[in-house]
Length: 252
Image 1 (cartoon, helix red, strand yellow):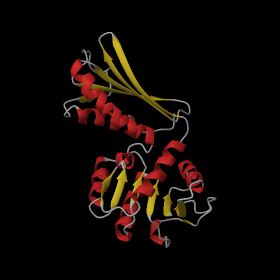
Image 2 (cartoon, rainbow, N blue to C red):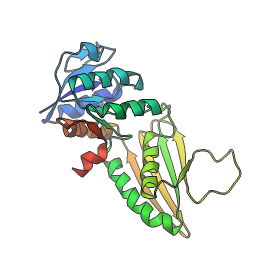
Image 3 (tube, helix red, strand yellow):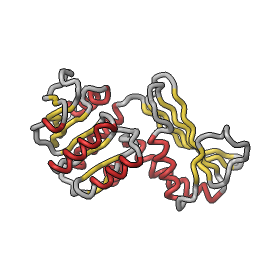
Image 4 (cartoon, rainbow, N blue to C red):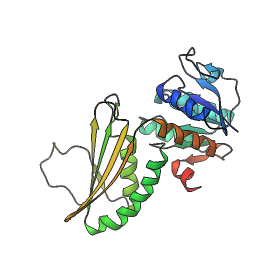
């Protein structure tokens, strides 16, 4: 049984993770962290990790980048592996996360979906074959109208995964309105769409002469992210210090 502390338990994703965990006989959420301590939850809720006195095997965070300092401090001190699911971290915060990985097990993935992370592997294989054959690469991501960061972390993870397979010689283009020029050979275009209540849609286009190959992932509910986070927490329990991502979960 993996005992989990859930940060951001009062938010929408917190409720989804709570439901997913309740249906999994191998995990138990033993405590929640949320400023709204009166939020309904079937476990004790604390306003801050500093006052949480419940022991756990892993921590899942679906709160805010603002909570990173307290989360990393707690996890390092208590030696509780962290599964960081929050998006919008700055470069400085990402460096902070990697630094913490030297002292405790830390997982950070741009997207917790098992399907997305399997797709990242498939994209590398496709890129190695199609890019040398002259295929252009474009990424289009779509999300709901409340999402504030663009492009999505998942779109960037897709671009990075492709670029890694191609010796990192590609550059990213986010806006084609500023310069009137033809697209460069070593270029990955990334476009963002915001509207309605789209949970998450990512499409990678390999466009060649007379043929186009498309990879597409659609999330119909946030349950896919919650399920991945719970799977990650089970994987991370007992792991030694290090920086992990969802590829570790898939490949085990």
